[in-house]
Length: 244
Image 1 (tube, rainbow, N blue to C red):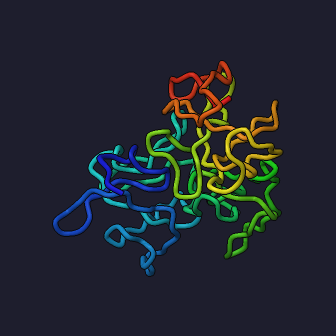
Image 2: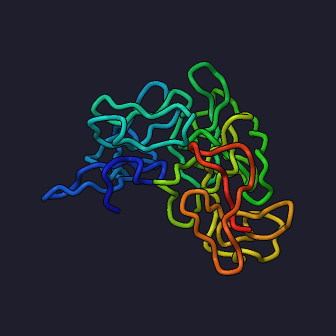
């Protein structure tokens, strides 16, 4: 999809000019690679093998950090030195929705190697405990059943296909952040639900046990519901709103 900056793309994708004549499009960086194998990298066979990474990941050329993948406001951003570089709290490129993987970093501290450094059980909406990992292991260790990588999101860039940006994450008491939750299947707004995964827009209102939609950014709700305030903690400087 065409873009002017990384803010027009889902987290995990940056904006780079490709082809001839060159056209700026969203380019996926959520792909493992190595110095000897960049076959999975779309952007000029670029592989980020920075020493801070436990698992190397594809990246893309950039002129400014604005070209790089964009995390939710409040999280450490990607940087640009000619190539987009992951923030210091990110240790790998495992993509949104894939099983979380774990290993030890250079300080022998167990970390996940998800693209946005976050993981969750979408169905239970809990953060699973990481598995036991041997720092001497040469392979990553998969998380428990249901333990999946989850990307934060900006409303402008949204999420990769099959996921919706819902402001259900938190940065303490002062700010919400968007998380990419599974969508496209399940009940429409107003349908009964017990979990976010039951809903077509990836959002179940726990207080009513009914599917809803995060309408903070666009104010759009289906007939029979309206976009109303759903909490005092803002997201991206906006009042958090859902279809009620």
